[in-house]
Length: 218
Image 1 (cartoon, rainbow, N blue to C red):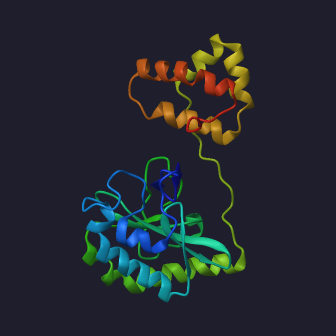
Image 2: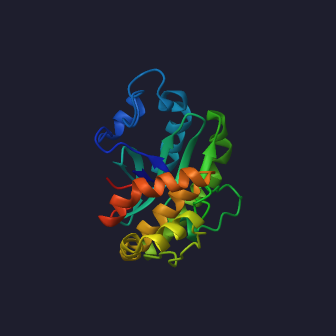
């Protein structure tokens, strides 16, 4: 499962906010070890935490990560990866980003939503800007403002089109999937380079499609 750009293992994730800063998120076998990414980025993560709290956000833990709320709405979430740590914004399409700090987390991310740090020392020089971004996002939450819903056009793989042309049952089942589930398969197939691999993935996915499930559902 992916939330705010961080992949989480639902069964193992932590539920106590203090556990994150002392042990990690609990989503991998490096939890509570010296190799945990949180340990590496702890000074920077603690500074991000302080900035979020000083802005007046309500701190909680969601999906194994420190999540910050205002007016009952998720505003931002922080977390650590191997190569960096991040402050990610919900409803990022609303953000003006005057400092040019926001980045897209991946090729399938519709809007820049992440401020990324590759050194603990990078947080403090951005503290004023970070607080301004948080206050902006809090304003949207308080006003109940939501970004307009947009659908990012995706190119359907030729192999998927051919498979559905040759398999009416598959085509019918795929057509009955929700747009989000259809999108999950297109992304799943477009993420590989070779036609042969796409054909194999379609064959493996067929039972899930017939069952009405998305690519990430089991």
